[in-house]
Amino acid sequence: MLATASRVLGALLLVTLSSCATLRNALTFEKPQVDLQKINVTSLGLSGGTLDLVFDVYNPNDYRLRSTRLEVDL
Image 1 (cartoon, helix red, strand yellow):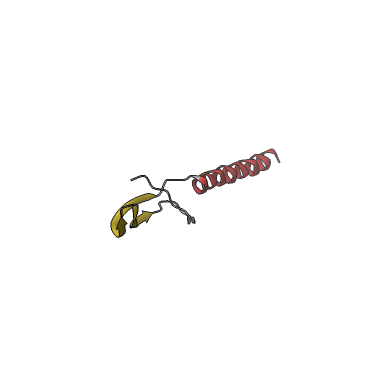
Image 2 (cartoon, rainbow, N blue to C red; image 1 turned 90 degrees about the vertical axis):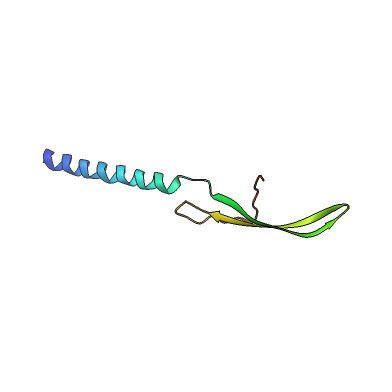
C-alpha cells in the first residue's frame, strides 16, 4: 500500500513539475524585433511635415501580440 501511494505521489509530482515548466514557457515574454524598412516623406512645409514609416515586426513569442499603438525609438 505504501509503495503504491509513493508511486502515485511521484507521478503527481512529475505532472506538476512538467505543468509548471509549460506554464513558465507560456508566460515568458520576449520583446518583438522591430526594424525600420522605409521612410516616405508625404508632405513637407514650413510648420512641419508628414512621414509614412514602414516597419518589419518579428514576434518571437508563441502567442499573438495585438496592439492599436506602437512606440519606437528612432
